[in-house]
Length: 314
Length: 223
Image 1 (cartoon, rainbow over the protein chains, first blue to last red):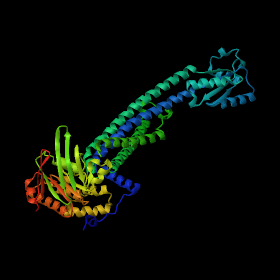
Image 2: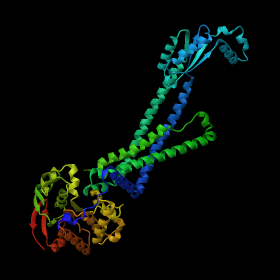
Image 3: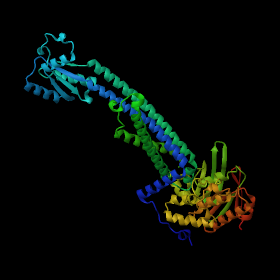
C-alpha cells in the first residue's frame, strides 16, 4: 500500500483569515502563559516606560491649560469719539461680532466708564474733582477666541477693527501679547524636545526589552523554521504577543497614572498648599489616553517585528 | 531520490567543509554517514534540508534543485523531511505533546487530529505516559525519542538524524535504531550521521565515509 493511502488525511483546521487568526491568537496566549516570567518583565517595562511618558504628557497638558488660561487677559478695546446712540451700538456690536475671532463684545458707555473709575479710585475721590462722564470715551471691550490670540492674528484683527466706521482708537496689550506668545512658543518647543527625547527613550527601552525576550526564544524560532513553518506562521503569534503585551502595558500605565493623579489631588492641598480644583487641574483628555494605548500597541508590534526580522532567517 | 553533484561547501573562504561530493541515495534506502568530528557530516545533512546552500554544485531531492528554491518554497521542502537534531532542539517550556504537535500544527492539522496522531506515535515510542511532561523532566533517551516522534509524526519521505545515539546507553541505542528501521520499512528514506562504529556494524546498511569533507568510501552491506 502506498504512503498516500496509508496516511489518514486529517481534517484541516484554521482555514481562512479568521481560522488562522484564532489559531495564532491561541498560540500567542499559550506562549504568554508558558513564558510567564519573561512576559511579566516585558509588560512591566512597557508600563513603566509609558507611565513616565504619560506623566510628562499630563504635566504638559495641565501647564499648557494654565498658560492658555492667562491668555484670557488678551482684550481689545475700541474707543469712540462720541457716544453712539443705542441703535448704533447694536449695529456696531453686530459688525464687531462678525469679525472672525471675536468671542465676546461688551459696550461700556461714558457713564459706565466714569462709574468704573470712581470705584477704582475709592478713597481718593479728590482726584476725580471736575471729571464728568463726557471726559471719558465710550468703548467696546472685545474678548478674542483662544485660536486668535497669536500676535499676528491680534494685529490683523485690530486693523480690521480700525476699518469699522465710528471707531477712532484701538488699544490692546501689544507687548504683553508678544511676550506671552514668545513664552508659549518656548514652552511648546521645550515640550516637543523633551517629549521627543522621552519618546525615543521609551522606544529604545521597549524595543530592546522585546528584542531580549525574543532572543531568549530564538531556538523556538529556529526550530519552527526547520520543521517547515512559513514566515507568517513563525512571526504571527510573536506579533500578537507583542501587541497584547503593549496593550496591557499601556492599560497598566494609564491605571498607574490615574492613581498618581488621584493621589496628587488628595494630597496636594495638605502637602503643597495648592488647591487642585482652583488650579483647574484635569486628567488627560480621551484622545491623549487613546494615543497612549495606541502607542503601547504600536510599540509592541514594531518592537516584535524588528526583533523577528533579526532572528527569523527564512 | 537524493542526489549530490560536485557539491562543495565553505563556511569561510579557503576552509572547505565539503569538497566535490557526489552521492546518490535511492528512495527507500537506509544509509549511514560516518566520519570523524569535523569530517562534514552535519554540513552535508544541513544541505539536504536547505539550512545551508552549497557554494558549488547541486543538491537535488526528487529532481528538485534545492539551490534554486525560492525562500517561500523552503518550508514546503522541510515538511517532507523529518530531522532529528544532535541537540534534540526540544522546546523546554512546552510539553512532550506540544513539542511533537508542532510538526502537525505547521501543516495546518486540526486539534483533534493532532491529539490522536501524536498520542499514537508517542505510544509507539513508549512515551504515552509522558504526554504532559516537559522535556527537562525526561531522561536523555526519552528526549531523543520525543525528537524522533516529532520528526516522524507526519510520515516524512526522508528522515535525517545527526548523531542520534551519541549520548545514549546500549539499550536506548537499540530502541532508537529499531525505530529507524521501522520507518524505513514503511518507505521512508533514512540517513543517519554517526561515528559510532558498533551501531553501523550491527545495522548492516550502506555506509558513506567522509574524511575532511570528501567521500572516501561507500560500503554496501545489506542486512
